Image 1 (cartoon, rainbow, N blue to C red):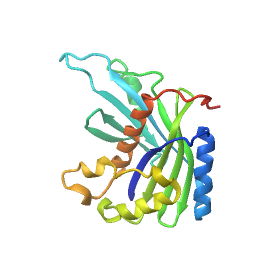
Image 2 (cartoon, rainbow, N blue to C red):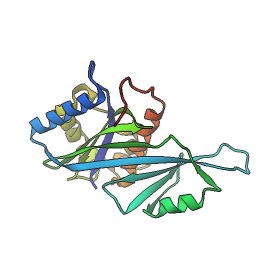
Image 3 (cartoon, rainbow, N blue to C red):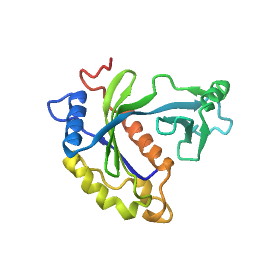
Image 4 (tube, rainbow, N blue to C red):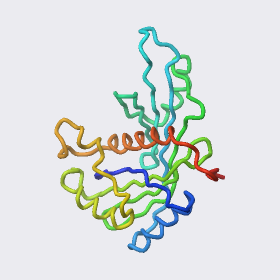
Length: 212
């Protein structure tokens, strides 16, 4: 896995979520990007059923990514996290006396996957409760694993199809103790999706955003 940036792209003025997604597809195809199937990332939220200490309970997020179909990630709010196999979902059902699924809080992003030279681009529609809540764009530079060595190149590439919506350097990279020159891993990508999904949960439902 290379250096990855995940960001939320605003819906174009006067356009729907789907129309904006189609615009992004068109821009990528005009650059010469080739469509390579589809992708999804999802997130289920769980909360502790009891807390003997009297302190506020941390939420537990269980996330899946189509790039790693045989595993899932479990992240406690504020850490720690673990990587488990796909049967972890079954374990969570058995732990229902300790962790309850927060119904209606599942968020997912699904969409098309594009390849352009050493870049992998995923444009997804973010949905919650069958309603489109926004657009996610994931850009991975597969030829490098050190953010500080390739961020300027990634930013230049993203400007070619995102224009002024290019994000800043993801906080997950700069917050590491050793700074920008620590190799990335899949946790960095999922942390960015979790941050995006958390913002989406707080947003208003977009007009005419029902997903069929």
